[in-house]
Length: 170
View 1: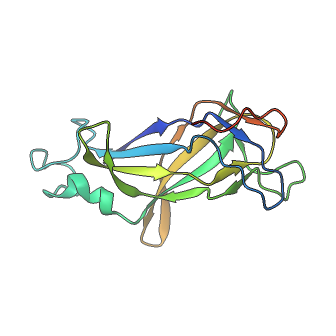
View 2: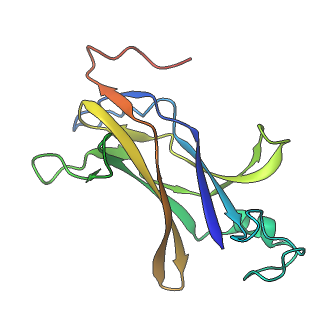
């Protein structure tokens, strides 16, 4: 099987949250869509494509019920794929809040209300000012191992200090 990841809602800005308990989530919250497709036809598996693994009549939507998929969000530089995990002190993480999302089975309002799988990050904050991208990595728990499936990057967004922050979007 092959995985398609698409950022459906790009992060645009955030107010830096510092090291205290205060949380300032990225706005708007990043939302990533997952599609599992047949690598030969680029379509979801179906009985018409019986030659792929896991192909039973319900497989096209069975991944939506899979509790073993999760996505991890990490901070990356805007100009390359270098991940940023720690502040200069080497002890404090660059991000705070929920950096992991389970797969949500939701209706896709942009695609005839069809069932779809999404990862949502409503509580993800950044501790330092600057321009960043998110690296969003899909994993699957298989037995007692965790397998990396695919990663995608968001568009660059800016994290502002409290004085410079323009405010949350509508």
